[in-house]
Image (cartoon, rainbow, N blue to C red; front, top):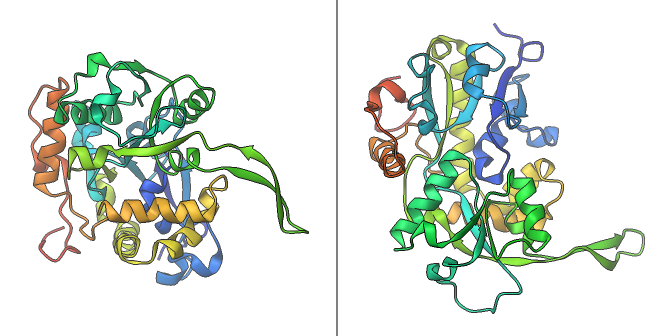
Length: 328
């Protein structure tokens, strides 16, 4: 029997966002009374980290630096390690990026044609960029007619936008949400507010997920050999529970549990962020990446120039925890 306190499951995320709330609930680093690992299995624990820009989570898995990683099915296409790594659980079945419009732009109903000729900070990581381009295609917008800016990391993009260097910015939440409200200097003793320490600079005007539709956006991966271990089976049992919880529990309760992951986001706005993701229905209860979702993601990657044949059965593991699946 594994002593998880001495040998915790090592989990790494490719990026940090409330979009990955089911995973955050699973590895819950918050208060002990809300810790899902303790609720479902006494003493069960994970070491959670977020990959730095130069880290390859596939290599980290192959080198036994981590056991489980957050990735996407697109990460396995034309990947030298794909024959030894499997996608065993879907986290999100929609894109979780939003477009934020600067406050100085006249307040009117957003139309995708507004992006033409505008300066737009677009995430240039492969999948987010591909999805943005496909959303433009779906909305009959030529990507080449947008003044696209590569602002670097999400944190750098936020800084660029706050410094006035773009009309729109393309971000996941809560970073997108954090641009939409004022933060004040608070005197805790008198419970009064003073000067604005972080000003509101924009409003969320569009969802890439709504424009593109259902697909396989992010998932969990591990070595194929790891799926035979008791650690894997305990982890996937707990993740199944927390994924259902993320979609069905009140957004406020989830925000209260995960708030420690987002110290710069006020609880009210983390609540709104999670409610928006719930309304996108991106955390349905199924673990298995459906073939339809897989094919849609493949279609978008091929729209962006991917070549090759990538059979679903070689990339995705079906889960027996789903009501319509019988094999694991």
